[in-house]
Amino acid sequence: MDATALVAPAWRLETEAGKPSLSLSGDWIAQAETIPVFPADGLKQLGAGSALRFDAEHVGRWDSGLIAFLRDVKVAATSSGVALDEQSLPESARTLLGLLADQPPEPVAPRRPGFNPLATLGATVLRSLSELGIVILLLGSTAHGGARALGGRARMRTVDLLGNIRAAGPSALAIVSVVNFLVGAILAFVGAVQLRKFAADIYVADLVGLAMVREMAAVMTAIIMAGRTGGAYAARIATMQGNEEIDALTVIGIPVSDYLVLPAILALAFTMPLLYLYGCLVGIFGGFIVSISMLTITGAGFLNQTIGAVGFDQFVFGFVKSIAFAILIGVTSCRIGLKAGRSAADVGSAATSAVVTGIVGVIALDAAFAVFATMIDL
Image 1 (spheres, rainbow, N blue to C red):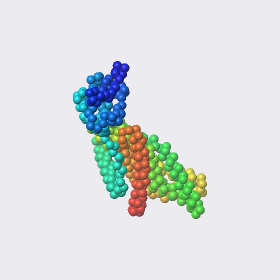
Image 2: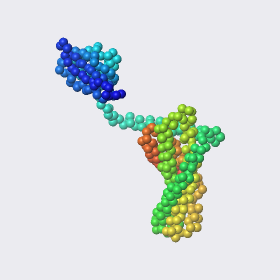
Image 3: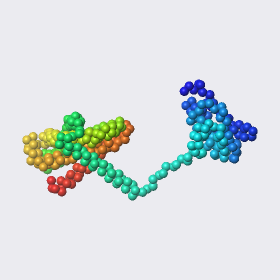
Image 4: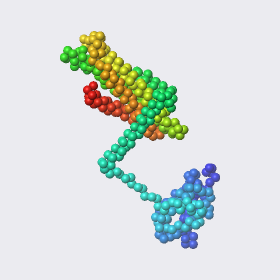
């Protein structure tokens, strides 16, 4: 709109035949940003009980700018006890003005929640149970999709599964190697310092072998995958949520659990046990290097002691734990991504939450496995 072609709006308070009148003129267009401001005390000089009429004969074009000005006049008249005669205003302006309150609403002070520990505890429990139910349903639908996949009726794409396997397996070999090698070396170093005092150097092999196979390889590999792959899953799904791709899949009838969640969980369940076995090998090798360099142990003696100390049942125990860790990381990461918001900040929050939840969940589940192993005397 050409602002130069508009007549500047103006108002004037005057008295005609002893009756106050508010004369309006010009074009009252809000976009022109020339709407004058009516003071809040502009009608106090009229006195309570007076009647004010409008003279809108010289008003040209108008829009919401005129209504905003009339609203200020209406508020000032109400506070001064002045009655308004709106008959001379355009009919549409009278209608819009009638929809507005005489006084602006009083700001409502924010309600500060009181201290109610029972209500807080109940709300927390309900949220936790609701989230647990959603996760169980997601896990159930994923298990159903996995059963269909075994029967050759899978609705997931093979390329998605292979892509997830490549990202979760071969791409993680480097960091799994470094971490497990260092953990095995640290265990051997700490054990060597203590066992050397009792001339029991050879038992460093037992310490490293049992610790890596039973606990450390599975836990450290799971923590690595929670930080590396779990965070990536959550960020990817949260980004799809923000781009409304999840909504598009739902609209066209593609189950999200089959298209996104199932390939992710299957990829982790397939690669984690293999990474666990690889981590055991690398960790024992790290202990082997430290032992033969610091202690009076031969390589053959270390290997022979390790084979005798680590039974096959220990590998089975660690293997089962790694599968459970994989399912935990996959389900929680995908769930966190699915419930994320739609902004860019929510993507980062989802990734962070997935990493933290995965690491804490792995440690808690490992504690449960430790208690179970004690109960069955493993």
